[in-house]
Length: 524
Image 1 (cartoon, rainbow, N blue to C red):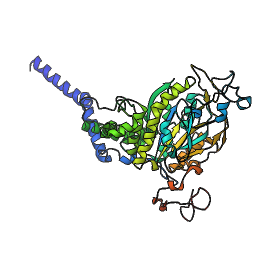
Image 2: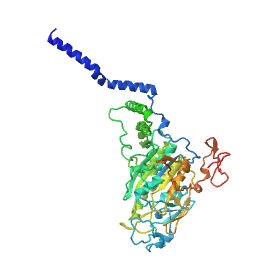
Image 3: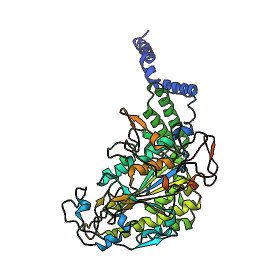
Image 4: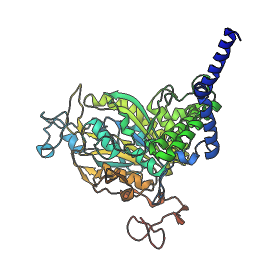
């Protein structure tokens, strides 16, 4: 045998040896993984996507009282609209325009930018009218609100605890000024889940226009210590509604489906050991993102909206306006989204209030009216709770940053609710004659939260999550109350069957004020 032949033979034997011991295992690793994954898919039945009901599922046992509404649309006028130029007419303040603000009101009270300055009364800068059959008082800044006065339940005695924008938003959204707590939308979707399996249960959209638009941090719709799948998902109202939602170029829907299914199969297998709620959230997020690739383009395609509906809202699809967001809110509600939060930034009117009230109201007033009318025409207002308001109100005192304006104010301001059988055409509570302090039927933010939860079918006193050794609630540890006196018994829809009992059928009142019987044991 020649040296050349011996060398070839030795080389071949060496290669075969190395191939069997190292290279084969290394090169075949992908094949082993594929084989293992195939076995995993077969053994665990993971070839199918996650069950639809698991994506937006709530907690067992909820609702735990008869629900009045299915969903919430919260219209946040970020910056703090003035109650004194919207829903709270003050003739005495008008008479005292330019006079010193009595010390009896302001001594020792929290004041934002007017601290240490001479305080003078600033009368209302607009005329009010008695509107609708109810005679509800609404300012001329809101002519479209005037048309729907009989649908509104105005809360004229709101109070909050934070006087600066970001902590005030945090308090309005989470019930506390401590950052990192769950937002109200997260609480609601955690408890009830969502009827939509192709869209998130909690959606946020923002628009801008007015004076000094304050930024809104994404933690305002965070899930805090709740599983992160219950956090709000922000939709952009211009361009692509959700970033990075499209498949990469060259990747088909079937390939994307196979990838998501395979990844979730591995995650489920791993989670048999970890038992991690965050891994469950990741799996749900992958699945939801895939479904949104199909559902979001349909949601955003306004070609099926008649021109008269677009005209009613004043909406130009894709322009990022509050009007377009209101129309999208109705479309989201139709698709089963549980909590829809719209922010319009621009209501921080420290100066030039008349000019910027005209701007802000011009951008939001008609669209808000259109949303209420659209929901009514489709029979959806009866099971939708709409809430309108800012993080606080404005002072009765003058502030002149580029013309007459008003500073932040937390002791008394106005919000409104509509839908869900609320008593429309109602003004609830009052501030004093200068609009400084809420003095009658005071409504704290936690009372607003309690009423919202109650209308959704959640007993606010029995809805908590154990965290750091405490039973945490949206309404906090201090006493809160449901505003029963605002709820019409006609709001209980006829023939709703709830846990075996039929609730409704016209006027349905049990012995005792604002309670109803579900059977021999009663209920609340």
